[in-house]
Length: 102
Image 1 (cartoon, rainbow, N blue to C red):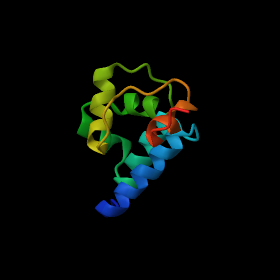
Image 2: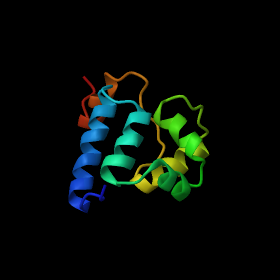
Image 3: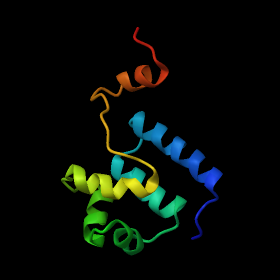
Image 4: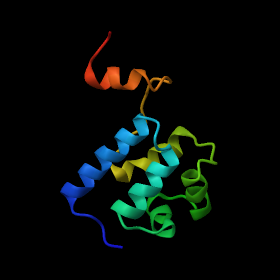
């Protein structure tokens, strides 16, 4: 599968992040979607790119891994994402993103 053009990749990233923030997608599913459908890379290729084993990548994508911040940073960095702080309550995320405190 070929990677998407840059503009399409950005739109797909934004859409996937919305799904994540709305609780419709897990972090692992997000990673798998972006790796496979947006970048067009196999697990082996992406694991090599970020410096982890294919097995670890598989576990992450299946939401079975207990990740350190270091590994999370390595895995999501090529996708233009960084590890950060989000509210535990998914109901607060839209308020944060929209700037509503009501």
